[in-house]
Image (tube, rainbow, N blue to C red; front, side, top):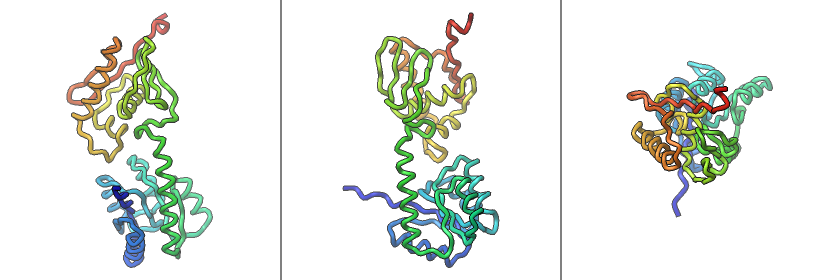
Length: 249
């Protein structure tokens, strides 16, 4: 039976001794750790690497922890976050949670408590991701019309005008949803990849193009060719929804 991969915990803490102690306890509890003593270093790490959870001090030399969390959101880097801070004021706790942090732990804290809180946040994050079809689509999303077909994220099916229902993959649903949400817009390949796979995904443009080909072939086989899904050479794609007859009256 394959072993479950160890979660990677990014510790952003400028007190070197404390950061090392936290790292030792977490690694003894079966986790991997990466320590950054500045927000800028943590941002650089997260732009190029995946981490399962972030332990974030509130007061750092180069930036406030609250501001850093907001910067992560702007960069579309969504990572479960626990604030570790000596600031135990209620106002600070409320602000941290309202900004999207998953927990707020005040110093001093015990190693077993921190490990337990990390496991709790990771469990909640795993359950939340269970509803994700792709980064931009959830199983709970409502069906939507795409050309003459109906796409249902819940059942991962496409229903065509002749009544036939076809199962399609997660990424195809994500692509169709993003095109549907961004009509008549020139969408770059990079933007489409980040929106469907995530900003850290290692997906090449050629792989995206192959998914587009699969989608085109499916609709063509069902006599619903996607002539209105244009390839913008060197850039990406542009989807122009069909004009219904009732819209022209």
